[in-house]
Image 1: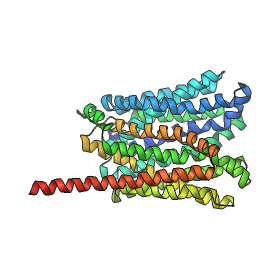
Image 2 (image 1 turned 30 degrees about the horizontal axis):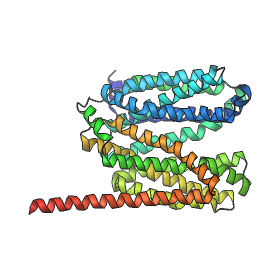
Image 3 (image 1 turned 90 degrees about the vertical axis):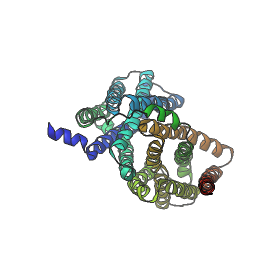
Image 4 (image 1 turned 60 degrees about the vertical axis):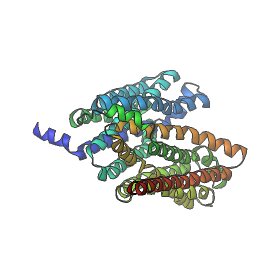
Length: 403
């Protein structure tokens, strides 16, 4: 029993459990992708209905995130994590036994709610356990597991579907969920309650630095997702890519993001979060227009690796900076702060494909990418300018105070 208590208090234990939770969430998210043709044929679903099925995850995730973030800050992380797992298991079993598109959509909505529990209470628990100087590296490690789950989901789902039919991928994930449930039940514990978490939670949504981070996350997610509707057709027409090539190329972006995230977290702990994310925005801005220049799949893979790495430098530092903002405002409301990240990311994932596809239709792919490039550069430079003006204003106040 003493050994179990010691394990609960060890931050590494919590990091492993949360990383496993994130991995399973993204594994289930991606495992559905190769099964989409089966849904189309079995339920005679149109492309619009399939789009709704895929997109309703982001919808429920966006709605549930601030609610579960507030509940986690007020009543504790562990309870939210456990109930989130129950919802995830229900979602997975509903996927396995669904006999209509309506039930599949309900399952996908529940999956988004379960993910919201992990991405608020889970990340907040890591922030509770790690001091500010080590948060960036820990949160970056979690993002690596997110990328691993995203990368493995589609190929594992397709392979299991071919081997054992429609239900096997979901039974496979259900086994992982049960193991994860035991880990959450016995290896997680709530940190001491912070009395002012409610008041801090209200301040978060009005804080200028938090709002600036919201913009960074939204633009980072938009810049990545803008490629999803326009590049597959471009690859097919200009590089002769087939569906497997396209999957590998997008997988390279995810792989780069996962590989860079721990490094970005480590650098943010040592060099500062703000400078790193602003530099990441500039690198991302420069790399986006390059994706239409290569004339071979190998060179295209190299450019997309750069895009994924840049996204890692943009998004990873936002997590410890949000935690730092909570500390500055009074502490405790970490789940609410990470709800800001999740909401911004969800909005970016919704806006990016719509804007990217629209601009590509009206103008061209290159124009769409140059416009995104311009927006990223303007935001990075204006954020630096605002920060400089705030510093100058503080110096003036100090000087006046001395006089």
